[in-house]
Length: 90
Image 1 (tube, rainbow, N blue to C red):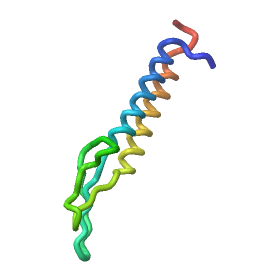
Image 2: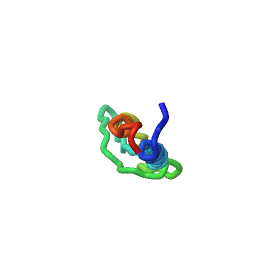
Image 3: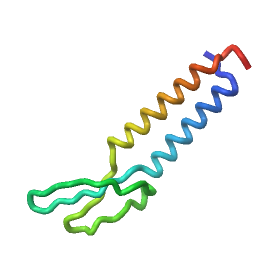
């Protein structure tokens, strides 16, 4: 299957979005004290400089489930975009 210009643009946009999403992933604050454990969103931040917890009972981790969900949504949107733009028309 050969892609037309519009389909290539959609693919390029999708790749750029995935790269940006990987560079600025979602983070989650974790809190653990004795038997209590909770998590709360910490927003998005550069992968090399994550948000900081207090170091004792509060930590921070990547929100992998949200990152995967975002990636799936982008892949579906790009796939639909490429599919819906007819490759025979230019």
